[in-house]
Length: 87
Image (cartoon, rainbow, N blue to C red; front, side, top):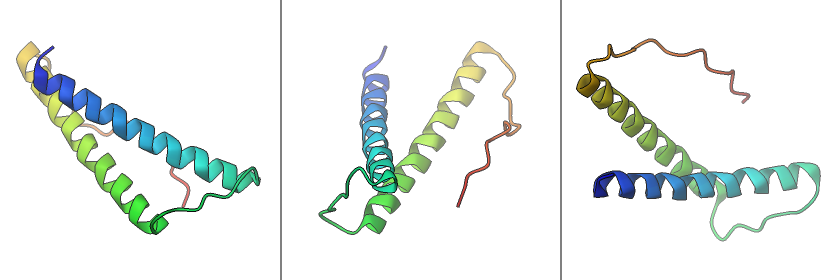
């Protein structure tokens, strides 16, 4: 595994932890198990998480295309059946 790949995976793991904390805080608040006092507006945190998720999503798509090209596999460009996201 090359250094760039290790750095990418470490950063993706960090984002995974941040998303996990966000989800757990939301679930605790929704079930009445706790209330989180944020040190900055929640909208800022959500915007940063959303931006990071988009960034990593694009990078994963690039990695997929690169792996397909290297291995000679056809690039699948169709969108998988994604679950509906509640608003």
